[in-house]
Amino acid sequence: MKLDSKKIGIVGAGLIGSGWAAFFASHGYAVSLYDIDESAKQAAATRTKTFLAFLRDHGLLSAEEHELAVERVAVADDLADAVAGAYLVQESVAERYDVKKDIFRQIDRAADPSTIVASSSSGLLISELQSVMDHPGRSLIAHPFNPPHLIPLVELVPGKATSAETMAEAKRFYESLGKVSVILNKEVPGHIANRLQAAVWREAIDLVISGVASVADVDKALAAGPGVRWALLGPHMIFHLGGGAGGIEHFVRHVGTAWNDLWSGMASWESLPPETAAVLSRGVQEEAEGRSLQEIARWRDEKVVQLLKVIYDR
Ligand SMILES: NC(=O)c1ccc[n+]([C@@H]2O[C@H](COP(=O)([O-])OP(=O)(O)OC[C@H]3O[C@@H](n4cnc5c(N)ncnc54)[C@H](O)[C@@H]3O)[C@@H](O)[C@H]2O)c1
Image 1 (tube, protein in one colour):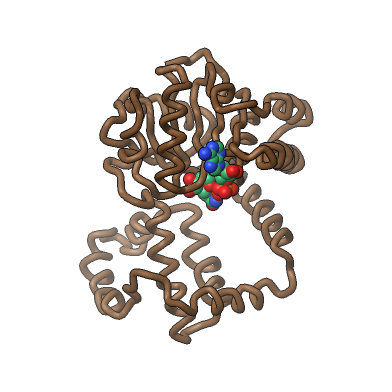
Image 2 (cartoon, rainbow, N blue to C red):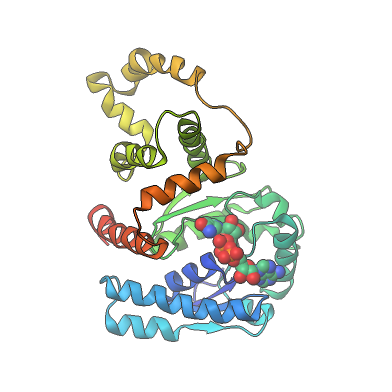
């Protein structure tokens, strides 16, 4: 592995590629951004600057660090230029097997064999992506949560051909930049966090569609209740505490079993009901109470910065 190299290649410069660019540049890495779409490349350079300014404005970068970070971001002429000499390539193109496999093939040929190739994929299987590579041992999923320059989690997923060395090095690398990593023992569509989100969202949609509560109240119930604790601890530890002196064992035996009745009556559909988009769209408009998307996103990101300071001492 090229521990002395400080360059990160980013292939796919949309929302996530730009967030990664701001993240790596803010941690001292030179970033080379590539996108197949020329206008997307320029938009990504602008978006990355906006993200870096946000980090400076919220005390996460000093004025001097911000200036250096901006200078570290370059737009590459082509894919080979982006990945040449890179320590790691963060693939962030569209979430489709055909697109990603084509890109994996190109990165594999253009990059030094020791370069780590990490995919941002939210749910695809890395074994399928790495099947087109001559050097698949250096590839893995490194799935961020949006926005990557703020949210700590990165999910690291090995494929059938990923080497133990690659997994250990990726964990060391992302954690050295302050990321909180989890490692999956085996790959599964959606990794961990999106499967959990999908399970909760199905029930949230069902509660609205079946008339139990409004979109705003379902959102409020989650955010003001479990969500506050979930920012600190996951469900297993929460219920371990909920079991009192007997811990999780007591909870499972005496409290958890009452939930069997709940589970038997909960949503189990496997594709979104046709009315979902229309119902949720009306609901979130009411919930927004006249605030624009930009206003809500800015409020969320400012609160996230405050939370990170409290929880992770950033
Ligand atoms: N949006 C999220 O919340 C989120 C969160 C975590 C991970 N991800 C993952 O990150 C990846 C990118 O998602 P996004 O939301 O940034 O999408 P996006 O549509 O904003 O960006 C994708 C970019 O890839 C480019 N692209 C497409 N084909 C290409 C090719 N052949 N070569 C080079 N560039 C190409 C597009 O021009 C576009 O700019 C996906 O795998 C997605 O699952 C997304």
